[in-house]
Amino acid sequence: METSTPSSRLSSSAAPSRLAKLTSLLPARMRERLDPYLEALALLAEIRSPQVLASLGPAGVRGLLLKRGKQGVPTQIRAHHRAHFDWGYAEDQPEMHDLFVRAKQGQWDGDSLPWHISVDPENPEVPLLPRDFLAMDLLKEWGYALNPKEERQMIHSVVSWMLSQFLHGEQGALFAAAQVTEAVQFFDGKLYGSTQVMDEGRHVEVFSRYLDSKLGKLYHINDNLFVIIDALMSDGRWDMKFLGMQIMVEGLALGAFGTLYRLTREPLLRELLRMVILDEARHVHYGVLALREHITKQLSDSERREREDWAFEVALLMRNRFMAYEVYDEWFAGRMPRATWRQFIENSPSMREFRHVMFNRLMPNLREIGLLSDRIRPRYAGAGLLHYSEGAAANQLTAQDMIRDLNTPLVLPN
Ligand SMILES: [Fe+2]
Ligand SMILES: [Fe+2]
Image 1: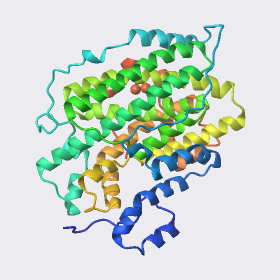
Image 2: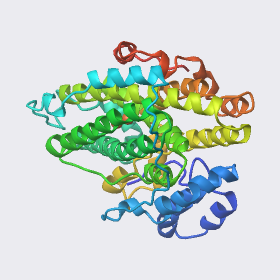
Image 3: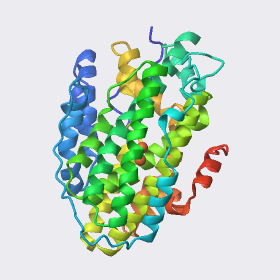
Image 4: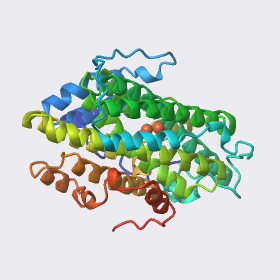
């Protein structure tokens, strides 16, 4: 069946080479079984800073090796933060207060979305995503051709997978927002945080309802997303939760929501995403305000450097790590090497677009909160990401800017 598959070496991002050499001696079936674990080890081995490894390592073991998110039972994660009470109620952050006022006015009811629209996930007239979202022709070239009906079914799987990850991310955001509301020291930030908790609860509600009532599918949490959520939940430092959730994960989510909004033709999903995006823009704005104040005025140089390294490593980890293996397991496990699937995903046009939109959102925010010093800039330049840092940060964008942006065709750089 396979005609000319690409190399099935362990990983394009390279597992440690000695390990790769050793495993190449094993029978193909055993190699396939080891692949997820070798990929996990390669991922952890890429982290250079010992402090970052100490922060992400234990979560990495729980998520990547023990697969805690995939055992079909609830997961218990111990939280270590301190609740910060302020009995003075000083209103000393006017920009945060302004966001609080806007957030109160921007509340909406998930029931008010046009749920009456009937959604057929495999209807070619109203596609959830265009066929060329995935590199379908590569599958054909490599001997895994799908017929048109199967292609539409696979797009249904991929959209359900993406929305499932959004839903799991929203659950993480709900808990992180609640924790940060307790832990943050700005009184105006606590008031604002209460609106974000409600926002995230509503996002869990609408994504869950869409998956359940319109797509009829729910996928397990992706291992890499589990690692990030686990690390944030268990880190006691509120600013690390914030940096991870408000800046990195929400930045990624905003990029992903925006990309899906641009590409889908399904009207209910478009409206749902538009409303969620308006909320998320406020969340990232708040993240930038709170962290800029904290990082530039309250942290020591060494504490700031640790956050800078952490953000860089997490940005790299997130760049290529959402490989939709849960869809691979459903469609190709046992008949296609995982390495081939990785190449398929990496070569899909959607991946380039996701990466572009995500870093376009993320990098200006890192600049704005003071985590893009001359010390770290060469490393971002080496990773080909520095040119994204010049754009407007979340605190410089209005909701109208965001929507105009979403309705402007995307031009990717070469
Ligand atoms: Fe959210
Ligand atoms: Fe959010």
